Image 1 (cartoon, helix red, strand yellow):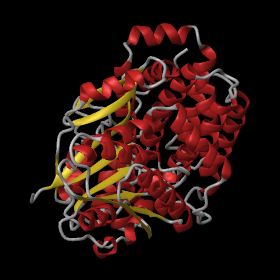
Image 2 (tube, rainbow, N blue to C red):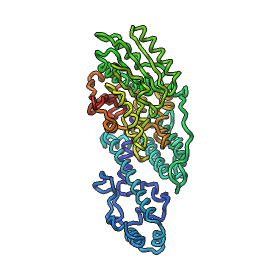
Image 3 (cartoon, rainbow, N blue to C red):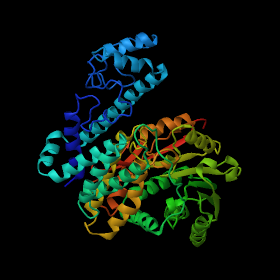
Image 4 (cartoon, rainbow, N blue to C red):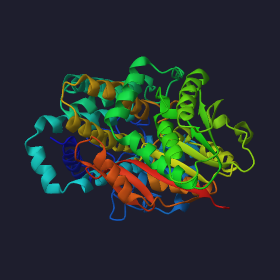
Length: 525
């Protein structure tokens, strides 16, 4: 049974039941708020706020009925206003609020706003869930799948408890989830097991109520385990995502290099950690055998953090190119993306440059918004003829944990559902891909914050804004028919689709976007 339907039906029911209850999300969210002396949604009159009004989509600010001037009065006026809002005039509460600095009260108001916006993010995610299947189908499926629905309910409740730093309640829910989320169960049980790991890790890092943020986490190492390496190879062989990116990128590079004698490919995050240069063997073969004169020289610069591994791939590619009679040069640039400088690439006169980024640049997206823009601006100085950008097409970098959690749950449910259709339940290859590759992404999205959170996937329209700000303009990918023909030849089950989205090509599973490929050129050229 399709797990996405489980999720949509439960979340429709969940949001409907909580649509009129403000911030009370059936887990006493306000009760666990670390400032109990503030007015709550239950003991305040409706003049305090209306969190779910008809125009709630415009959530830039809360709909306060009191004017802002009232909040700018003296401490005595502030106490009077607060007493009016809460429908009472207790002297104890008045004295308590009078003793608070005005800035601290405003901080609490902002905290209420953060909760409201978090609920809005969750509601938007729920709307996206329900768009994929009509409501009647989802509810009909839910009636016959009580266990799946219960698992969804437990996951959402646990995520809320973790978000509220309610460790005791979250621990109880995690114990129930571990009994139901089976590594060799249904597709949704398997994806739930990965989210349970992420929630457990996040719960271990959060500080008690009254504290702020996360406790320090152990720095992540850059080494790749043998299990993850094997899982990545299986993902490349079994799933179409990475090969789709390679196919589109190579087709665009071949078109850009038409008639050029000296060409240079810059590969950011060389080969994703795959042991062989699959993408570049295919490109070398196409360049050597294309109609007309092949380029006089092909250069590839591989960017990564393991020079020895990259050089081994380069040596393999050089032997392959020599066998086809193509002059080939390979260079290793051992560096992180943030530390790249234009002069590191040694661009030669008359050389045509193409930049290739397959599932790499999302790791440079930070809260500051400046890190990615800085990297893109440095790449712009190379004056590339084109930049190929292939990224996961989902909003896993939202500002609120609960909304991010729901987006990730929907996205990876689709991926696990596709694996369920391609491989038998007890196939060890599927278990390796799920537990050592996709689970690692899920755990990073769910459990990490700050610099430790590197899986910051965004939708293609968000990348359009980022690339435009860095001085790039879209070059439409006009090869939809060619891509569909490629997908038809790929040994994969039915259910995968390719569509065009404003000049980008998007690979999806049952209409759920999975990965998007886009092409960019410098605005000045």
